[in-house]
Length: 482
Ligand code: ADP
Ligand code: MG
Image 1 (cartoon, helix red, strand yellow):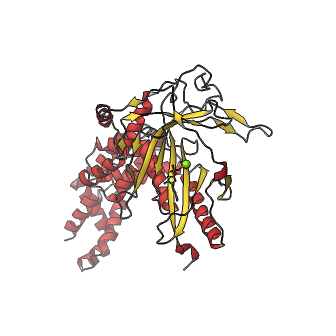
Image 2 (cartoon, rainbow, N blue to C red; image 1 turned 90 degrees about the vertical axis):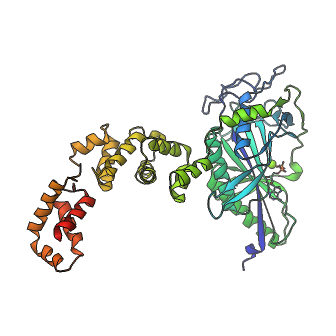
Image 3 (tube, helix red, strand yellow; image 1 turned 135 degrees about the vertical axis):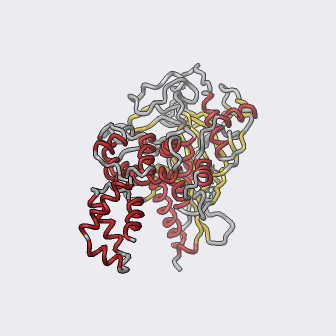
């Protein structure tokens, strides 16, 4: 047994999700990403004396959407608080947040949904707050630059209970949160651009212990993979340190993506005293049952609902259903195909197979698939189901032609002369030709070598130029051989 097996890992995650509201949390400044630095800033964002914040109602709505989606308790009376600290990219000298009255408590995120590994991770709280500006340290060799466009952009912070047990589970937790906020359309979930950020609290304790070890908090992971790497590093570092007789200190660490390590940012002694106090410039906001049920009525469809629909109503396999619900645009595209065909299984095969591999190969997203509409896919499926073309022809001839032109599937099939022969007269002619050309094989078949049907079918496809409907042809061939 390795020393690492003696320990149990405890992880709690704090996720900040930037809300995709058009204007900031407490002002009408634009939130557009990538604007010229320091252009989306009004005196309110900058905290000039005498300016007053005003709550963007959408923050509340987005918070409620998230709360409903994770089965949380939603708070009626929402108060705001000032969290005070001094930092160059925080012009006001404080953030407006929710301290003692988070908009949501409880609720859970489901890991590995619909699988044997399924497990719920409880959520402690979800609260509304605002972002700080951004300090840029890598563009000028002598100075740090500051962009305040982000100052005041609305955030939700989702805090999990310390129930996550491994780096894999942590990665899955972030994956599920990101999927959810995207489905809910409250955050674009883009970790590279910092719209979704994750801080990982990690501790270890001897197996069977009921006292948690001291934890560290690691920041600055800009991808799910890096969340996993940072936690893996932290687990080993902490166990090695304890095994060497050392002690874990409560501290904030940062992740170095270049070598996968974490390093000390500040220790507990340097921790801020945020001197929270109620925000005097904002009234408490009331969220009543009536409002909550209105938001509930407009809640977008969620991955788990879709999964249930696909597996029970559409009869898809769990595997296919899981792949489709992975991304909302993908699921919407699939739903749209199903508006035009009832062959759901074929629709699933098409988008999980041919379409997906095309997108992967060409580094395209499904939103860029404008030349191939869901209706086109349904049309191709219809051609196959009515026996006019084979699946192979559809994949190898029709699909590529759709990609490069704007004819309909039927037009392509006709122009390329791909429509299968399923009329008995035409098929009979082909079979007669095959018999004439291969008399000895026909003789051997009649003497009991039944496996020769494969060979004769091959000859038939050759004679017909691949256009014989294989099912019908096979049937007719057997009939004519007896
Ligand atoms: P803080 O305000 O200092 O960040 P919180 O109480 O909000 O502290 O907790 C932050 C996160 O740390 C939560 O996600 C929680 O689950 C997690 N956490 C608390 N104790 C531990 C521990 N011993 N090991 C791992 N994670 C922990
Ligand atoms: Mg924290």
